[in-house]
Image (cartoon, rainbow, N blue to C red; front, side, top):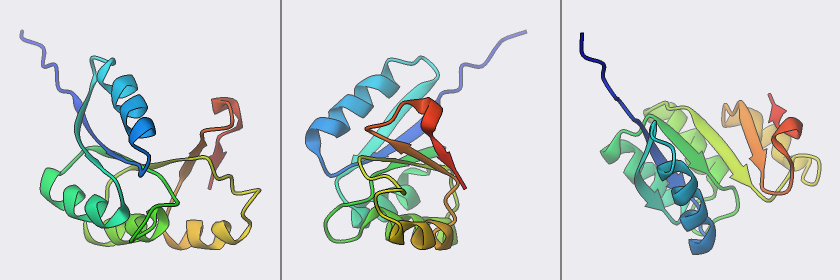
Length: 122
């Protein structure tokens, strides 16, 4: 019986070129993941989520044109996908983000500054 080696297709959304490369390197080093695209702002993220049909999306928050929370809300309305927020912002530092977090239907937030043990869940 043949086994399938399906890779999870990942869309990386990050305005920092350096962090995009870091995240792409991390994901592509895992044999179960494949980066299928990277976007530098929320506007590109929405378009690429529709055209590339990734299995999961990593999303930064503070980006030009359309921020990550607005892009997440739009993607979750039109083409729902698991979205992991990867940001240097923390919910504790920005209390106003909590309300936007809930309206965007987020359920996982990873901070660049915090270990995974302190990941926030909605």
